[in-house]
Each structure stands twice: as C-alpha cells, then as structure tokens.
Amino acid sequence: MTEADTDTDPELERGVWELVEEAERNVESLSVEAVAALREEEDVTLIDIRDVRELWIEGTIPGARHAPRGMLEFWADPGTEYYRDYFDPERRYVLFCNEAGRSALAARRLQEMGYADVAHMTGGFTAWREAGREVEAVEQRDYERRDR
Image (cartoon, rainbow, N blue to C red; front, side):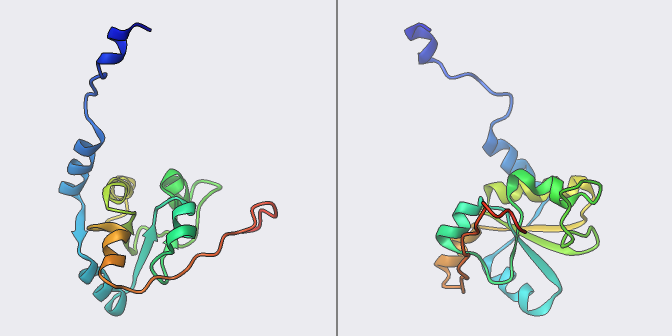
C-alpha cells in the first residue's frame, strides 16, 4: 500500500447516517416522555437492542426485553430456531439503543419483516438516563453454563 492509497477514503454509495435518516423518515420516533407514558398506559414491549456488554455496564429500562442488534431479525422470525416468543407481529414495540441510530435501523427492519406497530426512542438509553428515569441493573450471565 502506498501513501497515496491511505490518503483517500473509499466513497460509499450510502453512509450509515444516511441509512439512519432514511429509517427515521419511515419509523415513528418517540420521546423519552412518550415512551414512559406508553409503559404506564398501553400493552407495549420495549426492546433493548444494545450489545449485552452495554447492558451489564449501564443497565436497562425496567421490564425491557433484550434482542441484540446482530440477532434481532433471527429472534423476531418464528421460522428460525432462534425465535424468541416475546416477538409477535401483532404487538406494539418500541426499540432503543444507546443514542437512537441502531434502533431506527432495527425498527425499520422489523417493519420490513411485517411488524406493523414499531417505533424507536429518540435519544436512546442515554436520553432515558439523562431524564432521570429508572434504570434496572443487568447481571452478567455465566456463559460457560449456556443456559437461557
């Protein structure tokens, strides 16, 4: 590799932030306050799509389910061996990540799979915590035992 090769960045057809902006145009975005109110009033499932290490370090929203971004489509599809029974295309879902980029992309993907009532939380878990909302600790599992 020459110095000239390292001076230029490859051009992408669409960068990640363009994908996030596109997803946000097609997905309902809810404020922290709106999500907190939904938890009180409606039958809604919150899905934390952050990496499990983020949950261990920072905690999560009480009652939220975890579906890591890398496994979301597999866990949401009843036709896979990875399916989790808390996914149902007839339910209401609000996804969140750390700051809302991953959750916008993930919510859009669930819509494309046939989940009609999906939103994501603006500002993500960071905004939730900064708003002084309740946070639940997540205990690190013993993965050597591999039990669910």
